[in-house]
Image (cartoon, rainbow, N blue to C red; front, side):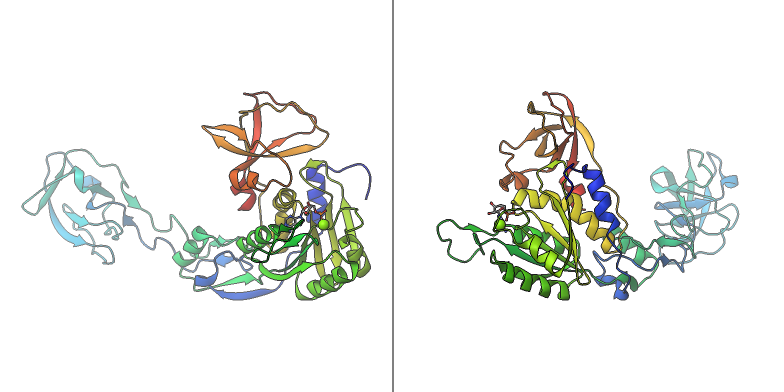
Length: 399
Ligand code: AMP
Ligand code: MG
């Protein structure tokens, strides 16, 4: 590990350069594809909407037939799902939202603007050409690629796939992540808490973060702070998964065996990153698996996951992803202890102002449960109440 720390952006670039997108493609029922990554572009074989259709309940007419006083006989009635006939000149068609506009008609007047009497209709105000007509193909044209490879399939994307009639989708194989947790002090909830022990919170957080991304999690449990146990579990993990993610044990203390275990079985790279919270960013390869070592401190683990591991995993899953969006807000706090490292502070927006959680310790996990974003403070910067600060919503870091 070099002594001069990397910027967050440089460290992320290093890590992303190591992420090889998964190449196996499988066919998935569209109904079960939520959260999957599209691997085969989806090309529409239908046009949406298929025909010019009415955007309103009302009357379709030929603009040339309109004058303010003229009554037009209602010559047909077209409901959604029906096909009308050609509109006879000098007449209007009763039409409903979603119904095809009859040929010959070139505008629709909504029923609120119509006067109807004795099978005839008139319109006080001049319609505009094309008004309230949704054009065939204004959403999708047959032959068009509607979803690109690399698209993560959320509710809107699954709706688009359904709108072109797709029942199956070509998706990337689900990524498998094996996880394990180091630390002789950690105890699973449900077990008695002996003196000096703490509950394992990283397990709950990490499994939730991975599951939310659509990653299959293989939980190899807790591993004692011993080299042999760490090596054995790491070996199993690397055989079972595409990516191995661990918590704790990557500091340089005598009880930290993860680094040595990775070195023994593969190779490891550690990049010192000029950020807080966070420890070195730890990447390695063991067999055919990537290795990512999260810090043990729960807040550090979460933030390192969001800023580095998640973008790595998304690329590994074959997903196109954008960097997290952020915006500036006024600081509802003073930050008068400029540090050498870029800081990511747990914050919440209140009436548009960023408020800080009072305890910013890297072990204070309640700060993250309270926060709805991170305030990003450049190294060396100090902030006074009312200054503009960059706010990254947690939803952006988790989407
Ligand atoms: P380490 O990175 O192993 O030196 O751990 C740093 C700190 O994080 C220590 O205070 C650990 O007790 C704590 N820690 C490590 N693993 C966990 C975990 N799974 N859940 C909660 N705290 C942890
Ligand atoms: Mg430890």
